[in-house]
Length: 354
Image (tube, rainbow, N blue to C red; front, side, top):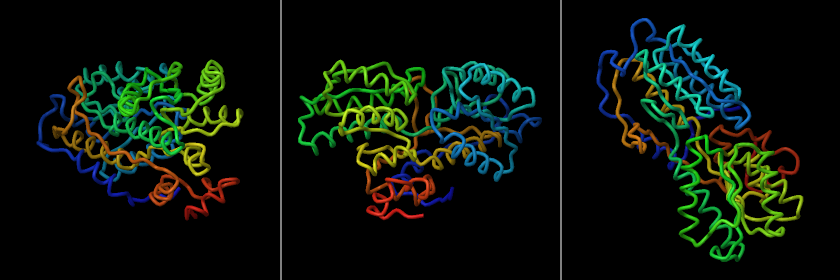
């Protein structure tokens, strides 16, 4: 996959908001690494199933950035197993870490963060919040939800439906993921302001097949009638769309991640939009923070989570059919893979080529 620094003005505006301020040299009182492990950055990714991004995008971006800055990396994937997550952490800590950058999986990151901090190692929660982390680097997750919610409101209006009377199903993410609440809250704030109330809201999951099953049950309970579906990400949206297709329905559907499947559904008119989170911006912000910590500095951030954790938030972008080309041009989607089969005609229509 082509990797490029070509990013939209909106995305670049996000990175200006996350630039670190107040860096100063310090000792190893939680703000830096000891001499023994100062060259080593330890990273744990959560899985390969919830999104292809972790291995295809985050791993190389983080590895390239940290090694280019002169640091050794130890990047491993827990493969959706909390026990493996803990084992990886123990192995990394036994070898020494100057900083730990953790993507949480079902709460496993909290125990690792506590153990690392007990050894004086700073912890960065990456993409998902982790209790006890020193810093949180992610996208503006409430804004992600707000963009999703707005796509549903706009989609209903474009279809001639009154949002206040529309039948809308809410399909959220796994509540064990701290981001899921932020996505939900951001979306609900926008949708409720337009008068939307959920007609059904199955339990949240990060699983396309389970989302399909849950949505089918909700659709049955609504007598087969639905006007729109707020869905928290592209993988879940793909599951919802299989049920809509099965029932001959096309309604506004939201999503996020700008995955290949999500972008294809957007181009085919089956998904109203996806929220594009330029992963390189998030990874670059995390690398910048990690390098500062490895160099013994004590960075500050311009935002905080409710618990006071410094929060570096990157700006997301809404992508409809006309903006899919921007994702390809930025190197976060491969045109050959994207434009396969029935999607070829839509790619030609919107000027997308390899």
